[in-house]
View 1: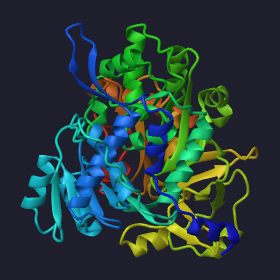
View 2: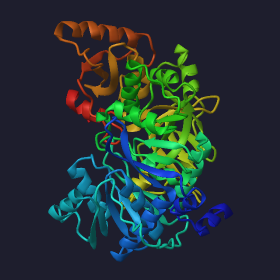
View 3: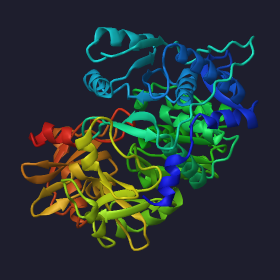
View 4: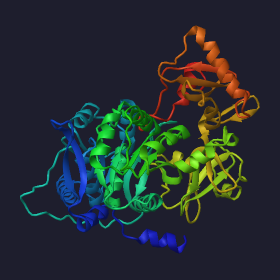
Length: 548
């Protein structure tokens, strides 16, 4: 083990220090705005907490949870709605050295209970429904030592009439487990990713420097877990009016109202959400001049969407960061770079450029292999321009999955000094060193003597004016495309043949799609619960052909 790694092992780090630090440096700045209704004028009525008040709420929860027997190393299943308790309780658990276990609420009961059984939480902190579920499905929650009921998004438990009770942070080190965050399960069963305190620190540093985020900015996170970065970055968190388990159902007016009323400067969300918001702004001729940046992730971002927001933001920038729950961020690209690339048909069918690897991150492209890889594979990287498997190393790369040693072995390449993560994605590095994404490895289609890649093929057909999105599948040993038309464009029987002929004509114009001759239509693609953007192509393959 080299000296840098040895030093990091001994370094004392606790993520909760970020909130305590901001409470000291900017005590009266708003840390959190939680909607509690509308005023008679139609404005959003917010409950506001300063950084000092949020830190007090953190310590009040830490004291309460400690009384329930939650201590350093305790696994705590956290099931609360976005709002004050989510942030305060997470930081309280960090401070105690306990380990919050965060599972997506919309993944379905069967998958959720499977995740609970595997993670074996010792305590449950959640809303009434979560407590009820734990009592009904008691076998999945076997081993619980306590259940702590949490109210709604506005619940405060600190005693404002008493002196603050400071809670000393646990003496955690950089390699101590900080949290277990589950993957979305878009191409397989959800897995618990083991996050260490030092990894959170590395993520905060990278996000701040990459996107030049400054203390005092205002963030509207449309993925609740991203709100946890804001106390570290000194940003005010505005909780959006939306259902986190069904993000695609968001009312774009609610998001735009919040941006305008609170002077939001930063926001994260999937392309599907921003598509709705962008169309709403265009219809109503709305500009968003306070926005400095939008981060779009969860699925490839169409250049047309970035172009739309160039007008809406005025002076702001859209970024598309690339990464995964297991390592975030890996790279990022700005709207100007994307639009410059999109000007040339030379890149059509070549995948999606996701930018240069960020400082401290190293990317290699290896030959595609569905088996376990050893350290020797790293010495055989593919040359630039050749599509292969994307592997990544850096300070925020996680080291394994919770209680899944076989999955860990399949996803990691371990050397003496570092861990590499196999992204499960295919892509290549171009001659400039930029990373290109071509699709998920398990979704590639091998047929007709060649390999077809989802992102390369779909981008060709997505140009059709009546196409919302497409999905590459394998059907009867041949590549096929499933089309989800835009609203109102689903073809009836007489129109279907003409639509397909137009798609075939597009396919013949590109080398990536010349051999694709089969097309199907689908009214609404199955997608992941986290972003409502990642297409379940394997599910579509079963539906249309019976292939897995």
